[in-house]
Image 1: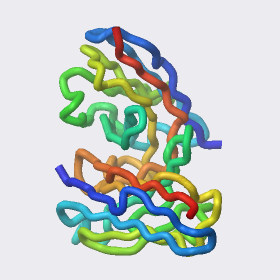
Image 2: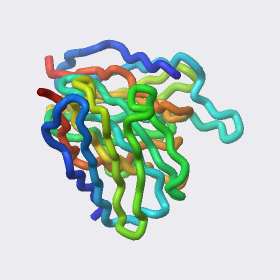
Image 3: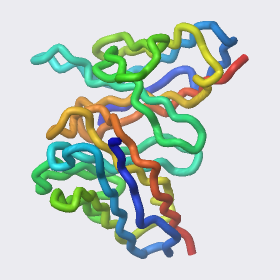
Length: 122
Length: 113
């Protein structure tokens, strides 16, 4: 079964840091670009960051650029999102997402994890 | 950034009736070299992650019932549920994946009348 399982969310104070992880199984992780998508409570979806299969090519939404870092370990089949200088507006469910076809991040998202909740509050 | 706008924000449809959701992008998402529209539709039920329904604007994902269909090209797209079932109550999102940042519409809530 193709599966993505996120972990690492929780309550953090403004200005704090958190690292999210996403463990992949059931498909060849190293062959697929991956994204992090977030959803604030009761709100819509925002594509936060993406990484290509090489692990070196990344992009970030303007809202998180300079504060978040995406990375991957293909040997561990794991995707990461290092978040720093967190703000109240970063409060959201964070989903790890797989693209359908492979190396390009210009692709639809066919597999979503259940998400991990990040709450930024004092 | 490409702005994706959905309409309506919500709609209520009787069981067995047709539901139509519109999606408009601020610029074309049709890639000329391969003639593909970089547009997807997702369904999200309460407490669940989104689920892919349609990609390339009209290709149904494996396992998705054929009452769901997508159409359109360029900047204007439509998701149609031909005969609404109780399990179709959800929020529906369209997304462009033509260019970064990949962007989603604001969502359309579908309810039973």
